[in-house]
Length: 311
Image 1 (cartoon, rainbow, N blue to C red):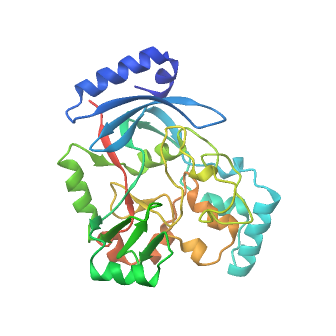
Image 2 (cartoon, helix red, strand yellow):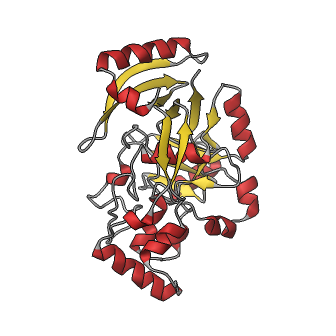
Image 3 (cartoon, one colour):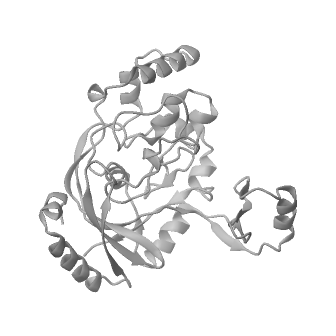
């Protein structure tokens, strides 16, 4: 099912196709209905499915354009000013256009197979534990009014509005562990190109919502009214919303969807703080700064997104 073909179907045809698709999958997949994404702007009705308690959306495929051509970038004066301040402080010898080109994948056409993609990424190695455990009780005493506490991605808790406490801990996982676990259920991880297509959903702008990025706060600031990056994209996916939250893919030596907070922690200014959320963002130099053990083994605390291949 190619994207253009899907768009030409009536809602009744999409509904019937989705019902038949669920019936032919080997997994116990349930068709939940059609939803429109996003609110405002272009809209696309997407089929939503449920498997193992998680929601998946149908991502049509076909020959698609991914990557980014920086010559098409139209930055605001504020974005240019932010970049120039950073370039002066860190000694960059290039302009904003050549820099953006250097940290995004080149424009290219690829063929993507249709698939069901998990809507919300899952934190790797997250395991529920009793809130009565001593380490959790100690944290609860230290932070009696906090709605959520994360103890260095090792353990923590989330407190509900009713006062209930959901405690958790992170257990060690490798990329191979995740791939094997998914394979036992007939699932897999996204490839490098599939992730990029899933993120942009056909958009040719720097970010999936356009070229604009705010200049007075980082994407981790949840107080601001501007929240386009937190909305699902045209495929209904919550993706590339926080530069700290990298997603693993089928290539165990790279991640997509962020830089692990490298730019924000480095105080590199608003534009470079938002840039890791660009659809085609990929900066091997940042990955080389990370511990090799992190790429090969210590992926717990990061995120994964399952894919159900279609017959």
